[in-house]
Length: 197
Ligand SMILES: *[C@@H]1O[C@H](CO)[C@@H](O)[C@H](O)[C@H]1NC(C)=O
Image (cartoon, rainbow, N blue to C red; front, side, top):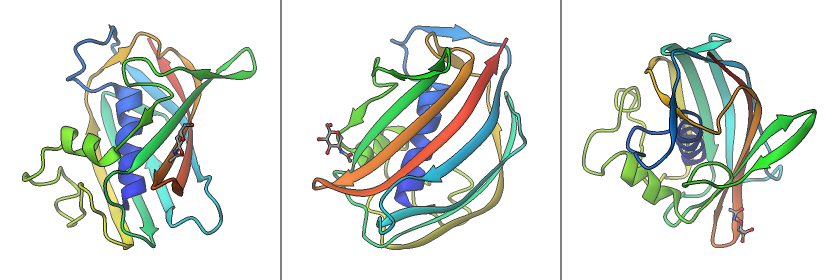
C-alpha cells in the first residue's frame, strides 16, 4: 500500500467505524452493521503521483463484526512526507441528491493539515506496524518512499463498534484528496452503503 492508500484507508476506517478513543463523540450502539456495494476509483489527474492500482475487498456485504478479506496495491512517484494535507469530502444520498456531511468532531468532510500526524496518533511511532503490514514489511508512517507497494490478500477481523449518531443507513461516497505544498498528489473516491439494525 502506498501512503495515499494507507491514509485513505485509515481515514475511511476512522470515518466509518469511529475509533474507540473518541469518547467525546455521541455514539450509538449497533449490534450488527453491513457494508454493501463497496466500490472505489482514483479521481486525480491522469499523471497524479500517487495512485491506487488495485483494491479488492470481500465479501459483499461486509459484516461488522466479522471477517474481511482485502488486497491492495498502489504506487507513488514522489516521496510522501509530512505535512501531508488530506481533504475528505463525505456525502450521503438523501432523496436522490448527494448531500455533503459537514466536519463534526474531526469526522465527516474535514480538512486535515497533516495525515502523517494522524497516523502517528493512531499508531505510535517506534512500535511495529499492525498486521498484516508488519508481515509484509509495509510501512505505516511517513515518509513513504517513492515506489510501488502491495498488500497480498489478507484477512482482517472487523470488531464490534459504536457508530457516530449521524452515520445512519444509506448510500455514502467519500473522496480523499492528498496534497503537499499546495500540489495535489492523489485522489481516491470510495462508494458504499451502510445498513445496521
Ligand atoms: C484542501 O482544501 C483547502 C481549502 O479549500 C485548500 O486550500 C487545499 O489546497 C486543499 N488541499 C488539498 C490537498 O486538496
